[in-house]
Length: 422
Length: 166
Image (cartoon, rainbow over all chains, first blue to last red; front, side, top):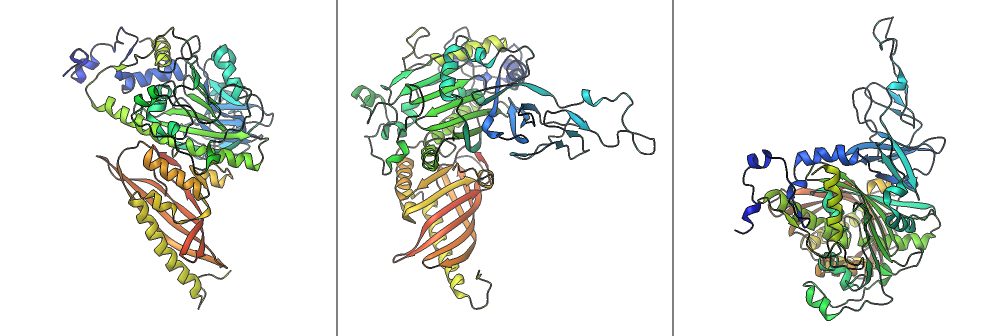
């Protein structure tokens, strides 16, 4: 058996000393994906820490009174638009006994009434009515000093940028623009350019893997042409495409940007020899699916942004979506995919986007493979003897057009270690 | 509207029996992973749409799978059988509660309930999808074909991924 020095054989030896990160940037300890203590610490240091958490899109609450269920990290929240057109994010947990009171995916309301004891909240999350406050016949009821102003729902600070809604528990948070950093903010603004969006629908799925693995997956250009034979078979992406892998100065956010050449990409012999699953290029019976209608002021036809902690934003050809990762314990997360077009789309453009969306989503050609691969990965980490994972490829100071690299994954974990104190 | 309950309305009852036969063959084709064969249950211009119930009821058009025409279905079949990586599994598609609702010339409007149970290696069998078909069948020289199959699924929260069509 190789790798003996990495093996911690019993739970006792794992628990006794503090979890220690290996003194090597290319090693990632497997306990960050499986350990409940790490999961609990992430809530405090990351989701309730100095971060902007993506919660949804403006176009999900287009009118005053609209609301939808969402999450800040693992915490259930409600996102609303009030009568003054302000967006609010508050906990989906009654201040009285703790009931998760909002049970619909989305809807329209002028207030939320907890069904258990009818405590009533307005669209800002303020408590506005409590039944039997004075009791009955002078007996019972609330204490005399009960003040509804103190008993509202816990609220998050909210900022919207380009129609994307972020929430934070941090009281002295920097702006979203500063949080993203200039390079990532520029790419973010290229997709979310301020034009009105139109919601096309939402996918939801549960993945039996740790939420961080999904961020890694979209920071990992190495797997793209190896796992996703669809991309190369139908000519959507090959490793020799012009690409750019930016990382923000803190390391926490990243991007995978690529430009699809006109016509079919040229797959070199070197590339073919390295791709086990490579198939000779196939024409589609219905080529409309891959048709690219230019619509953004950007040289990149494909842009995936990984915004720490739990947002990924995709612009691929004419597919536009955001993905919210909702942790549900160390070994599982839920993904909420919000797919949109633009308000100015005509019917044919909407249908074009719907056709193209077959590529992504939980039944998409790429979605199936990523979800399956991450499930296999978590199975390996969770069930086998402990062993560090490797993120060896590329160099930290390489040119940003290097594609066979794990630089962006290493950068995220440098930031993660720092913020988690590991 | 004439319904199958009307006395003497044998046309809808006959249509229902015919559609049941069709759906049993359809389910068996998918249980055998014969996605190329699955394509042949549709007309050239058919619409195949698998859509979450909450999207459908909110008037949101996004499909988990959305195929306009048989060509798109052929491309999905090719991709599944030749390019896709997924865990080995057994499929068990049950189609029940078949109803023929109306006949209009060579078109029959029908619904049916469906349940897809998936079984993966060393895992318990689980319901991957439960939903209702909203169908339009077309009578052709060679028998019935689907002109439209909208699969509206209640199981909005998908377990990892849906690999095969329903």
